[in-house]
Length: 302
Picture: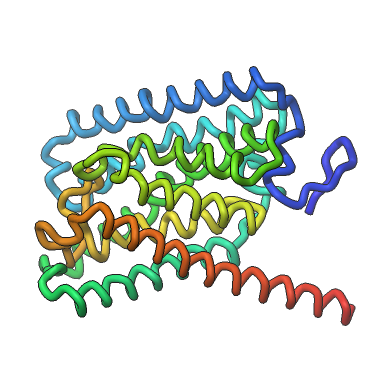
Protein backbone atom coordinates (compact mmCIF):
# COMPACT_ATOMS: atom_id res chain seq x y z
CA UNK A 1 0.00 0.00 0.00
CA UNK A 2 1.23 3.50 -0.80
CA UNK A 3 0.01 7.07 -0.41
CA UNK A 4 -0.38 9.47 -3.31
CA UNK A 5 -0.05 13.22 -3.28
CA UNK A 6 -3.73 13.54 -2.35
CA UNK A 7 -3.14 11.49 0.80
CA UNK A 8 -5.40 8.62 -0.31
CA UNK A 9 -4.01 5.08 0.11
CA UNK A 10 -3.47 2.90 -2.97
CA UNK A 11 -4.18 -0.76 -2.22
CA UNK A 12 -4.81 -1.91 -5.78
CA UNK A 13 -3.48 -0.85 -9.16
CA UNK A 14 -7.10 0.00 -10.01
CA UNK A 15 -7.00 2.77 -7.41
CA UNK A 16 -4.71 4.63 -9.83
CA UNK A 17 -7.61 4.86 -12.31
CA UNK A 18 -8.74 8.15 -10.77
CA UNK A 19 -5.31 9.58 -9.95
CA UNK A 20 -3.27 12.02 -12.00
CA UNK A 21 -5.19 13.28 -15.05
CA UNK A 22 -8.05 10.78 -15.41
CA UNK A 23 -10.30 12.63 -17.86
CA UNK A 24 -12.26 10.67 -20.48
CA UNK A 25 -10.52 12.23 -23.47
CA UNK A 26 -7.06 11.70 -22.00
CA UNK A 27 -7.83 8.03 -21.49
CA UNK A 28 -9.36 7.75 -24.95
CA UNK A 29 -6.36 9.46 -26.55
CA UNK A 30 -4.01 7.20 -24.61
CA UNK A 31 -5.94 4.13 -25.70
CA UNK A 32 -5.77 5.17 -29.35
CA UNK A 33 -2.00 5.72 -29.08
CA UNK A 34 -1.52 2.34 -27.41
CA UNK A 35 -3.57 0.47 -30.01
CA UNK A 36 -1.79 2.21 -32.90
CA UNK A 37 1.53 1.13 -31.41
CA UNK A 38 0.32 -2.41 -30.61
CA UNK A 39 -1.69 -3.17 -33.73
CA UNK A 40 0.30 -1.27 -36.34
CA UNK A 41 3.78 -0.04 -35.43
CA UNK A 42 4.79 -3.07 -33.33
CA UNK A 43 3.48 -5.44 -36.00
CA UNK A 44 5.50 -3.61 -38.64
CA UNK A 45 8.63 -3.99 -36.51
CA UNK A 46 7.94 -7.72 -36.23
CA UNK A 47 7.37 -7.94 -39.99
CA UNK A 48 10.61 -6.03 -40.62
CA UNK A 49 12.47 -8.60 -38.52
CA UNK A 50 10.97 -11.41 -40.61
CA UNK A 51 11.94 -9.67 -43.88
CA UNK A 52 15.49 -8.78 -42.80
CA UNK A 53 16.38 -12.14 -41.27
CA UNK A 54 14.59 -14.82 -43.32
CA UNK A 55 17.32 -17.43 -42.84
CA UNK A 56 17.46 -16.90 -39.07
CA UNK A 57 13.66 -17.19 -38.99
CA UNK A 58 14.03 -20.80 -40.13
CA UNK A 59 15.79 -21.72 -36.87
CA UNK A 60 13.85 -22.48 -33.67
CA UNK A 61 15.44 -19.61 -31.72
CA UNK A 62 15.14 -17.18 -34.63
CA UNK A 63 11.46 -17.92 -35.11
CA UNK A 64 10.82 -17.29 -31.41
CA UNK A 65 12.56 -13.91 -31.48
CA UNK A 66 9.74 -12.50 -33.59
CA UNK A 67 7.63 -12.48 -30.39
CA UNK A 68 9.60 -9.78 -28.50
CA UNK A 69 10.35 -7.90 -31.71
CA UNK A 70 6.62 -7.56 -32.34
CA UNK A 71 5.69 -6.49 -28.79
CA UNK A 72 8.62 -4.57 -27.28
CA UNK A 73 7.36 -1.16 -28.41
CA UNK A 74 3.99 -1.82 -26.79
CA UNK A 75 5.76 -2.94 -23.61
CA UNK A 76 7.42 0.49 -23.51
CA UNK A 77 4.51 2.58 -24.81
CA UNK A 78 1.81 1.65 -22.28
CA UNK A 79 3.62 2.83 -19.12
CA UNK A 80 4.87 5.89 -21.01
CA UNK A 81 1.28 6.87 -21.89
CA UNK A 82 0.23 6.52 -18.25
CA UNK A 83 3.15 8.70 -17.19
CA UNK A 84 3.14 11.40 -19.86
CA UNK A 85 -0.57 11.65 -20.67
CA UNK A 86 -2.28 10.63 -17.42
CA UNK A 87 0.32 12.28 -15.18
CA UNK A 88 0.92 9.37 -12.84
CA UNK A 89 3.82 6.96 -12.21
CA UNK A 90 4.68 4.80 -15.21
CA UNK A 91 4.36 1.62 -13.15
CA UNK A 92 0.85 2.55 -11.94
CA UNK A 93 -0.62 0.87 -15.00
CA UNK A 94 0.36 -2.48 -13.48
CA UNK A 95 0.73 -2.28 -9.68
CA UNK A 96 -0.16 -0.18 -6.65
CA UNK A 97 3.51 0.31 -5.74
CA UNK A 98 6.77 -0.24 -7.59
CA UNK A 99 7.41 -3.76 -6.32
CA UNK A 100 7.81 -7.19 -7.89
CA UNK A 101 5.10 -9.42 -6.47
CA UNK A 102 6.85 -12.76 -6.68
CA UNK A 103 4.02 -14.48 -4.82
CA UNK A 104 1.44 -13.31 -7.35
CA UNK A 105 3.60 -13.92 -10.41
CA UNK A 106 4.65 -17.46 -9.51
CA UNK A 107 1.19 -18.36 -8.20
CA UNK A 108 -0.30 -17.47 -11.58
CA UNK A 109 2.53 -19.11 -13.54
CA UNK A 110 2.62 -22.39 -11.61
CA UNK A 111 -1.15 -22.69 -11.28
CA UNK A 112 -1.64 -22.31 -15.04
CA UNK A 113 1.21 -24.68 -15.92
CA UNK A 114 -0.01 -27.32 -13.47
CA UNK A 115 -3.58 -27.16 -14.75
CA UNK A 116 -2.46 -27.38 -18.40
CA UNK A 117 -0.26 -30.40 -17.63
CA UNK A 118 -3.24 -32.07 -15.98
CA UNK A 119 -5.56 -31.17 -18.85
CA UNK A 120 -3.18 -32.62 -21.43
CA UNK A 121 -2.74 -35.83 -19.43
CA UNK A 122 -6.52 -36.20 -19.48
CA UNK A 123 -6.47 -35.59 -23.24
CA UNK A 124 -3.87 -38.33 -23.80
CA UNK A 125 -5.86 -40.79 -21.67
CA UNK A 126 -9.27 -40.05 -23.20
CA UNK A 127 -8.12 -39.46 -26.78
CA UNK A 128 -5.10 -41.63 -27.63
CA UNK A 129 -3.16 -40.16 -30.53
CA UNK A 130 -4.35 -36.60 -29.90
CA UNK A 131 -0.83 -35.56 -28.89
CA UNK A 132 2.19 -36.70 -30.86
CA UNK A 133 5.91 -36.62 -30.05
CA UNK A 134 7.73 -34.23 -32.39
CA UNK A 135 11.30 -34.85 -31.23
CA UNK A 136 13.61 -33.29 -28.66
CA UNK A 137 17.09 -31.76 -28.98
CA UNK A 138 18.35 -30.67 -25.51
CA UNK A 139 20.65 -27.92 -26.85
CA UNK A 140 18.05 -26.37 -29.12
CA UNK A 141 15.38 -26.72 -26.46
CA UNK A 142 17.55 -25.02 -23.81
CA UNK A 143 18.24 -22.01 -26.05
CA UNK A 144 14.61 -21.84 -27.16
CA UNK A 145 13.48 -22.15 -23.53
CA UNK A 146 15.32 -18.97 -22.49
CA UNK A 147 14.34 -16.97 -25.58
CA UNK A 148 10.70 -18.09 -25.31
CA UNK A 149 10.43 -17.30 -21.59
CA UNK A 150 11.90 -13.80 -21.91
CA UNK A 151 10.13 -13.05 -25.19
CA UNK A 152 6.78 -14.29 -23.94
CA UNK A 153 7.22 -12.27 -20.75
CA UNK A 154 7.50 -9.12 -22.88
CA UNK A 155 4.52 -10.20 -25.00
CA UNK A 156 2.21 -11.19 -22.15
CA UNK A 157 3.18 -8.20 -20.00
CA UNK A 158 2.46 -5.93 -22.99
CA UNK A 159 -0.99 -7.44 -23.44
CA UNK A 160 -1.75 -7.36 -19.73
CA UNK A 161 -0.71 -3.71 -19.41
CA UNK A 162 -2.86 -2.88 -22.43
CA UNK A 163 -6.05 -4.79 -21.56
CA UNK A 164 -6.03 -5.55 -17.83
CA UNK A 165 -3.97 -2.43 -17.15
CA UNK A 166 -4.74 0.74 -19.10
CA UNK A 167 -8.08 -0.32 -20.64
CA UNK A 168 -9.38 -1.75 -17.36
CA UNK A 169 -8.34 1.40 -15.49
CA UNK A 170 -10.13 3.44 -18.16
CA UNK A 171 -13.31 1.38 -17.68
CA UNK A 172 -12.93 1.44 -13.89
CA UNK A 173 -12.66 5.23 -13.96
CA UNK A 174 -16.23 5.45 -15.23
CA UNK A 175 -17.85 2.33 -13.79
CA UNK A 176 -17.67 0.60 -10.41
CA UNK A 177 -19.21 -2.62 -11.79
CA UNK A 178 -16.70 -5.49 -12.18
CA UNK A 179 -18.99 -6.88 -14.89
CA UNK A 180 -18.18 -3.83 -17.02
CA UNK A 181 -14.58 -2.98 -16.09
CA UNK A 182 -13.54 -6.64 -16.40
CA UNK A 183 -15.93 -7.68 -19.15
CA UNK A 184 -15.26 -4.89 -21.66
CA UNK A 185 -11.45 -5.36 -21.69
CA UNK A 186 -11.93 -9.15 -21.94
CA UNK A 187 -14.06 -8.75 -25.06
CA UNK A 188 -11.66 -6.23 -26.62
CA UNK A 189 -8.80 -8.63 -25.80
CA UNK A 190 -10.57 -11.55 -27.47
CA UNK A 191 -11.37 -9.88 -30.78
CA UNK A 192 -7.78 -9.49 -32.13
CA UNK A 193 -7.19 -13.20 -31.44
CA UNK A 194 -9.89 -14.18 -33.93
CA UNK A 195 -7.34 -15.17 -36.55
CA UNK A 196 -4.91 -17.04 -34.28
CA UNK A 197 -6.31 -20.43 -35.26
CA UNK A 198 -8.83 -21.23 -37.99
CA UNK A 199 -11.96 -19.36 -36.95
CA UNK A 200 -15.52 -20.59 -37.31
CA UNK A 201 -17.57 -17.64 -36.16
CA UNK A 202 -17.92 -15.95 -32.78
CA UNK A 203 -17.59 -19.20 -30.85
CA UNK A 204 -13.94 -19.37 -31.94
CA UNK A 205 -13.06 -16.34 -29.82
CA UNK A 206 -14.98 -17.51 -26.73
CA UNK A 207 -11.89 -19.31 -25.29
CA UNK A 208 -9.99 -16.01 -25.57
CA UNK A 209 -12.88 -14.20 -23.92
CA UNK A 210 -12.70 -16.71 -21.08
CA UNK A 211 -8.93 -16.15 -20.83
CA UNK A 212 -9.50 -12.38 -20.73
CA UNK A 213 -12.00 -12.75 -17.90
CA UNK A 214 -9.64 -15.10 -16.07
CA UNK A 215 -6.67 -12.74 -16.29
CA UNK A 216 -8.88 -9.80 -15.36
CA UNK A 217 -10.18 -11.60 -12.30
CA UNK A 218 -6.68 -12.56 -11.17
CA UNK A 219 -5.55 -8.93 -11.48
CA UNK A 220 -8.67 -7.68 -9.69
CA UNK A 221 -8.34 -10.14 -6.80
CA UNK A 222 -4.58 -9.77 -6.35
CA UNK A 223 -4.48 -5.99 -6.79
CA UNK A 224 -1.79 -5.94 -9.48
CA UNK A 225 -1.01 -7.44 -12.87
CA UNK A 226 1.69 -9.79 -11.60
CA UNK A 227 -0.60 -12.81 -11.10
CA UNK A 228 -2.31 -12.21 -14.44
CA UNK A 229 1.05 -11.89 -16.22
CA UNK A 230 2.21 -15.12 -14.56
CA UNK A 231 -0.90 -17.03 -15.66
CA UNK A 232 -0.82 -15.55 -19.17
CA UNK A 233 2.89 -16.36 -19.47
CA UNK A 234 2.28 -19.90 -18.19
CA UNK A 235 -0.40 -20.45 -20.83
CA UNK A 236 1.62 -19.08 -23.75
CA UNK A 237 4.83 -20.73 -22.63
CA UNK A 238 3.11 -24.11 -22.35
CA UNK A 239 1.69 -24.00 -25.88
CA UNK A 240 4.99 -22.69 -27.25
CA UNK A 241 7.47 -24.98 -25.48
CA UNK A 242 5.59 -28.01 -24.11
CA UNK A 243 2.54 -29.00 -26.17
CA UNK A 244 2.19 -26.88 -29.28
CA UNK A 245 -0.53 -26.45 -31.85
CA UNK A 246 0.89 -26.53 -35.40
CA UNK A 247 -2.03 -24.34 -36.56
CA UNK A 248 -1.21 -21.49 -34.18
CA UNK A 249 0.35 -18.33 -35.59
CA UNK A 250 2.77 -18.26 -32.64
CA UNK A 251 5.90 -20.30 -33.50
CA UNK A 252 6.38 -23.41 -31.42
CA UNK A 253 9.47 -25.31 -30.33
CA UNK A 254 7.45 -27.83 -28.33
CA UNK A 255 8.53 -31.48 -28.22
CA UNK A 256 4.84 -32.47 -28.26
CA UNK A 257 2.22 -31.37 -30.77
CA UNK A 258 -1.52 -31.65 -31.04
CA UNK A 259 -2.26 -34.04 -33.87
CA UNK A 260 -4.07 -32.75 -36.93
CA UNK A 261 -7.77 -32.62 -36.18
CA UNK A 262 -7.32 -33.01 -32.43
CA UNK A 263 -9.54 -30.80 -30.29
CA UNK A 264 -11.06 -29.38 -33.48
CA UNK A 265 -14.49 -28.85 -31.97
CA UNK A 266 -15.08 -25.24 -30.97
CA UNK A 267 -17.49 -26.38 -28.28
CA UNK A 268 -14.82 -28.69 -26.83
CA UNK A 269 -12.37 -25.78 -26.78
CA UNK A 270 -14.88 -23.62 -24.92
CA UNK A 271 -15.56 -26.33 -22.34
CA UNK A 272 -11.84 -26.98 -21.90
CA UNK A 273 -11.17 -23.26 -21.43
CA UNK A 274 -13.92 -23.01 -18.82
CA UNK A 275 -12.53 -25.97 -16.89
CA UNK A 276 -8.95 -24.68 -17.01
CA UNK A 277 -10.02 -21.17 -15.98
CA UNK A 278 -12.17 -22.53 -13.16
CA UNK A 279 -9.38 -24.65 -11.69
CA UNK A 280 -6.83 -21.81 -12.00
CA UNK A 281 -9.24 -19.44 -10.22
CA UNK A 282 -9.77 -22.01 -7.46
CA UNK A 283 -6.02 -22.49 -6.96
CA UNK A 284 -5.41 -18.74 -7.01
CA UNK A 285 -8.20 -18.12 -4.50
CA UNK A 286 -6.72 -20.71 -2.14
CA UNK A 287 -3.30 -19.04 -2.40
CA UNK A 288 -4.69 -15.51 -1.99
CA UNK A 289 -6.78 -16.41 1.06
CA UNK A 290 -3.96 -18.38 2.64
CA UNK A 291 -1.67 -15.40 2.18
CA UNK A 292 -4.24 -13.03 3.67
CA UNK A 293 -4.76 -15.36 6.62
CA UNK A 294 -1.01 -15.52 7.21
CA UNK A 295 -0.77 -11.71 7.11
CA UNK A 296 -3.55 -11.39 9.67
CA UNK A 297 -1.81 -13.86 12.00
CA UNK A 298 1.44 -11.91 11.71
CA UNK A 299 -0.36 -8.61 12.43
CA UNK A 300 -2.10 -10.07 15.45
CA UNK A 301 1.13 -11.44 16.90
CA UNK A 302 3.11 -8.25 16.27
